Length: 130
Image (cartoon, rainbow, N blue to C red):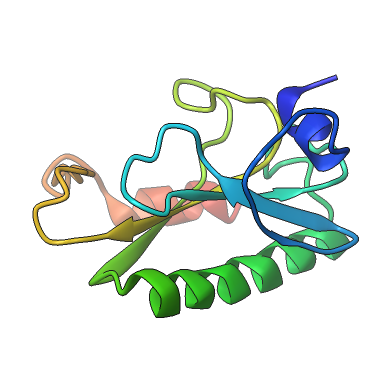
């Protein structure tokens, strides 16, 4: 059983921020920033490609609810939602969304490189719509 399933089943301790019958949200041990929270479906889905509609809706409702709790309680200047699927960055093979509150000078960084001169958007769109 995966670590997130064990947390969902209360088999190992966690710092629970929110929970209902389909979703659990708990503080990430790494705390990339203060309040870094994971929102996880209680049913095991490896990634977004396996996540069903019912649990997808439940997770996003919880993401919205917990994001507002974090904003009210911690007063961040913003919030990043991050979801990694498969490699290279998915470290736990159980779908989850990171809620990362942002603060002035928090030293958390996401770097989006500009590849606009290297790609053809029409070709990408055609590939997607095949």
